[in-house]
Length: 239
Image (cartoon, rainbow, N blue to C red; front, side, top):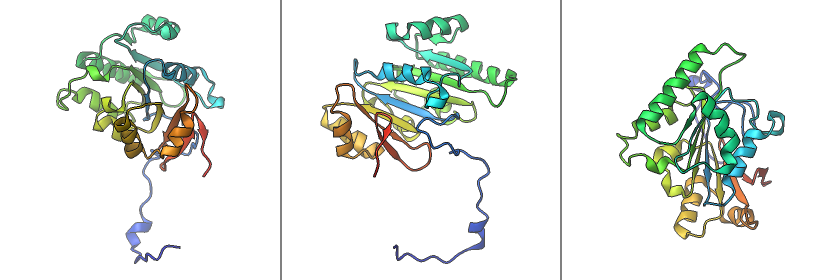
């Protein structure tokens, strides 16, 4: 038991939430917007397959099938055959992009705002932006990348979730890392990269070792419910 003592102040009892940013859904992928999911793995690791399975899996099984009203994909690296069906659908609505530029991001943000303003469905709109191995195309300067950063920090108000895939954690700057709600990491043999994963997101070495025993295994951490929760793939580690 802690020996720390405090002197109570009346104002503390008046601290009540004005909204519910964390929500009450304790699933690894809550069905709400304002979430950033980082998917970090080398080419061929299987991260694209995991991403697409997440979108195809029914909500009652923990996925996002049928949840999103509006999806955007930025993929400058050529059409991955795995994305073919999704790209075909997004090309019909003009929501597939092959460039990661400020102009493209401004256009996407404007489309989202217009969609939200005109939304008349049940509940609130749900938008998704997938940035597939492309944020290294952004300028290194925070000032020049302010459109992208503005979208990240304004996700909740845009009713937007984002999925960003990366080959290395070092490809994500401080703003991306600090706003991540869920992070999945695949095997990496670079000591500095693994050290960054552990320091940035609190992964214990033993969790990573266990997750990476399988060829396409990965570890996940979710901060979506407030406290970090750790998973092998999406199976929660019992402490």
